[in-house]
Image: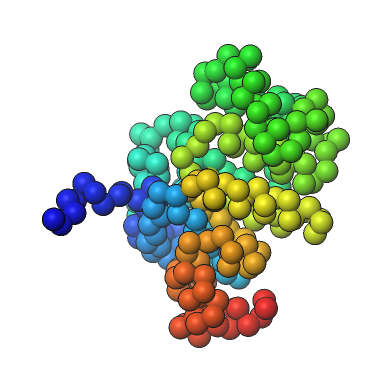
Length: 257
C-alpha cells in the first residue's frame, strides 16, 4: 500500500530563494551574501555547511532565526515563518538554539545565571525551576563545578560549554552552530566537538557551519558546500569529500586537506 502524503515528514528547516545583499565598502555597491538559496533540513538530520570565508555560510545560518533579515525569499523553521514580520522572533529563538563563535555570554552573570535567565524570561519558568534545569545542563556539558564563576573566570572552552548548556536548557527543536570551535585553543576543540557528536547521536536536528572537516565527515548526514552566496554542491560526506563533481568544490577541498 503506497505511503500517504501525511507520512512524508515536513522539513524542520526550509528556505526558498533566499537572497541577501550588504552594502559594500563605501556604500555605493551591493555585495551578494545569499544568491537564491534553497535548503531543506529534515527532523534529526545533521547538515554541515562548509566553504571559503565570505561564501554566505554564517549569513545563511543567522537568517534561520531572524538575526539577519533577507531581501527576498521565504524561511520556515520549526513551524514558524521567519520571514513573516508578524512572527514572534523571541519565541522562535527559544525553539532554535544558536551557539556562536564568541560565546555571547552575559559578562556580569555567573554560569548558572547565564543558563537560567533566558528560561525565566522566554519560557516563563520560576527561578527555582530554571536553576534546577540549568544545573542539569551545566552538569551534562561538564561545567557544573563552575556554576558560580563569571565568564572572565572561565576558559574559552568552558564558556562555550556554558553557551551550549544555555541553548539546550530551552529544549530547542533545532540547534545552529556557527563556527563554535574556531575561537578556541586547539586543545579545547575536541571536547566541544564531542558534545556536538552526542547531540547528533541523540537525534537533535542540527545545522553546523564549521571548518572541522573531520567532524563533517564523521557526523554529518549531509555536507553542503557554499561559494559566492549559493549552494554549489551537496551530498553525503563520502560523496562530497571523496567524489566531488564540481570543480570549485574539488579546488576548495584540495586546499584544506
